[in-house]
Image 1 (cartoon, helix red, strand yellow):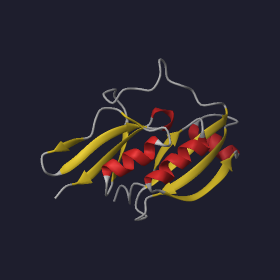
Image 2 (tube, helix red, strand yellow):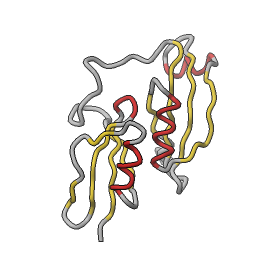
Image 3 (cartoon, helix red, strand yellow):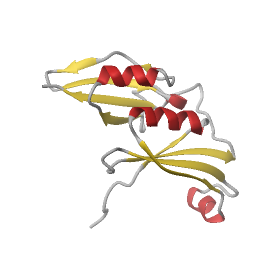
Image 4 (tube, one colour):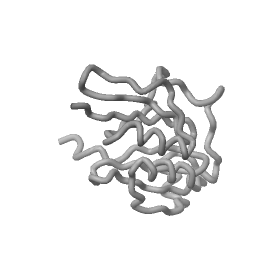
Amino acid sequence: MAIKRMDHVSIVVGDLEAATAYFVELGMEVEGSMPIDAEWAGRVVGIEGMRSEITMLRTPDGNGKIELTRYRTPEAAVPEPGPAQPNVMGMRTVMFAVDDIEDTVERLRRHGGELVGEIADFEDVFRLCYMSGPEGVIVALAQELG
């Protein structure tokens, strides 16, 4: 067998506390936080002398995880001219299934979330939207209909 499971998605952020609060408001649970400044970590990511802080979050069912990482040394690079649009190649969204999309959108707005487009229905199956969150991370939300 090639893989056992997908373990987590890592997102680099500048404001670890704000990003953590955003994902906690979404419904994720903090598993733990810690500094990462060991020599082995720099060897893994290919950045000698790397120092960072991470917060690991999990979905309520325990199956999905996100690692938020704030680099202290060197500081995280910001893409120019700013956050990428949803149609730029590479990973752009993390999708979550939610019970009530309108309520979720309103709660995330209090943490700086903004709709990228609008809330729309896919046939009679899903109500969907994209929200731009901390550091321009696009969070996709899906509410099952019917």
